[in-house]
Image (cartoon, rainbow, N blue to C red; front, side):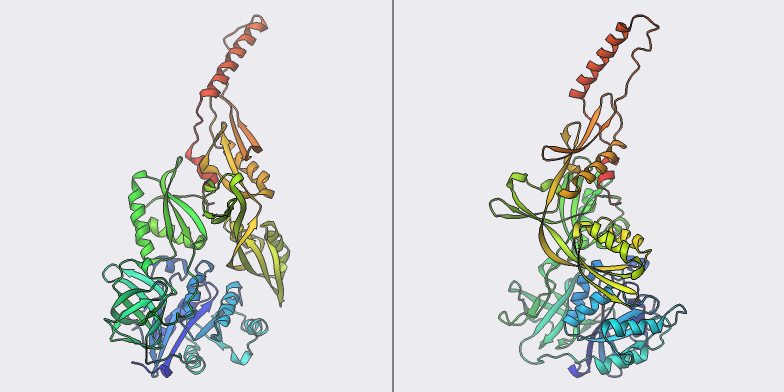
Length: 591
């Protein structure tokens, strides 16, 4: 059992791709936590997709021994979709290493994570990484950290995660400046659950930071969110692989093997305590999916494989939600809730790669709040579920606070992009040649290629971060698509009233080019209620019925044409329009 004075709990926070995982590798190497034989790059990124894409998704805690001190590093993701993982990590720490890439300087998520750590009262150590790269601008990065974050140049450390230069000094700095954890070593036990996962052999594992007391195997603990009881079967640390220990004491970070069988029984952010009446620790909000995408297997018989695969992924990813649904065009599938588009992309890749599925992904949508005329509230994530307008008093859409960090050269085009996406500016700050913009923006605008358009507008230099801020009343309408006068539910969209004409026009033009010609004319309409906002027609095939006439009176030709016209009208009345799958995908598919 370690003395609390000798424990340091810290996280590494940075913008995506600024070298967190590589620096973590050097710390593991220097503290001899991992032998050179076991060492490989990005050791804490266990998932092959994490290593391929060079991103961290699941946080991974690791315990290191160094000069008589126990250093608990909690690795954090850098990508905006996984920022909820960052808030979990920071809640279990007393300090944070703020990493800035010498070649890129401060970026949007560097600032977002810095403010988050500051709000939690953490001790922050500013560090410049990648000093070994010739193109790095170290003096520029120092002045940015000084001007934007207010650190003195003498406080800023310089390291290279690749070569290990400056890393021993960083370890000394962590020991000297990050405070030891505080807590009561005696009395009742309390621990904060900052993550959970499922092991097929052991059951549900709770990743905890013990705040008070001591937790040992065979202890009975209460989950304070619902007063349910659980038994502790085993306790241990991550070094970096699971290693059992006799107990976990106040200040320590480790895992508990529990007697629970379903990961959803254990709420991340909950407090585990030996007494059901003790005060809950300040946790953080439950994670709510914000982006919804429907997945359909290309082969209908794979639906059960998809269901089993989603159940297995949910065991290790508590943020995943799914419900089954049916589309007349695409068959059976599942509506899956995600934290963002990267989260969706990673899950889709895992489904296809690990479970051998071939999937069609429909366009992403967000969750709307509907206030009905009888004052009841419902939430919908599918446009087809929107009630009749006569039952709706208000539609509320999810809003985000968007932070964009861009060179001032591209300021005009970035502002134009944000304003065009129904954004309203909240703040603008100049930091040397960089500008920090804060916008209030509907989440629905962000999920439709906003990130790609931002990269184009800034030639790849701008970075963004966002926070969900809540629901706001909006003037939205249900845009229905009618083909041959029949409403096609699968093509329904929820759109801003101000954009219904342009979106309707674009949709019907897209469909006109895909729906094949029939023996009769096919009308394609976009309508809001009974008001048609756009229309296109697919012209009918026309057989040349007068070709067999070699001459004669015009009335003979007119008679044949009139007969053909009557036949077309009858066909149109009883004809069924054949809509190919590509037509649905052109409107629904994630571009």
